[in-house]
Length: 116
Image: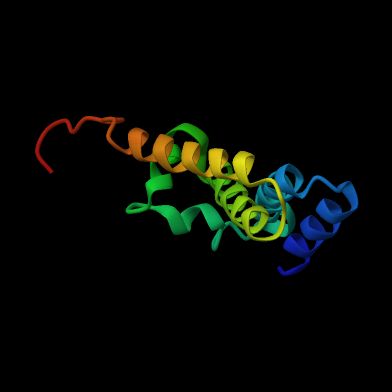
């Protein structure tokens, strides 16, 4: 099970653009892990954001694998803020993710019908 994120990390390092490659490859590795060898769909990173995270608003729009990519993008931006000179771009992405997710959380995506 650990080979999937290890492969994603290795490929992201080889590609060089860690800010974008790492989140996309992580989500791809989560998706592949969910169906290969009859699948291991549990413990996907996107599940950690439901229901009380500011990023949970993206869940109805992107699904669990898209949300996994956003969580990794958030982590990559925090890493870039701490270690590189890309402060403005990383801070902008962080703000857009958190504000956008919080705004999407306020939208009524479904409506209850009948009694529970």
